[in-house]
Image (tube, rainbow, N blue to C red; front, side, top):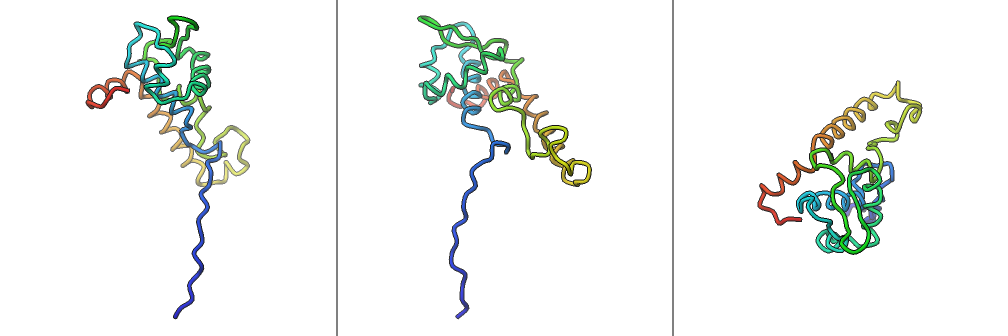
Length: 161
């Protein structure tokens, strides 16, 4: 009988804040902007409605909407009859803008954070690959507007958000 190694559990790494992962706050922001796109801009949508339909806790909605309002992606009115709506036409709002508003620029590797962030930038053969991946992803996300997403949602016969 051949001795076997004891089974070891692989520890799941928690995501690093510099890793490319869409955060739950960002996911909620994308769903909120898409929901407001699909409902139209003819009325103020109450926060309670967004929370209910998008399954977002009320305390989390405030965290999501504050930077989106500040950036002009959403407009907000407090009080009775208030709520949220798009701050500008959905064909001018890209997925990239919402993602960067809620979680900052996309960085696939620490070496892409900015000039001087990697001392091996000129020597590393992998650096241009990371840069190409980052640039390609940004290009795709910038290309997709919320008008495009709404059109796709409607054409797929999927339940409305």
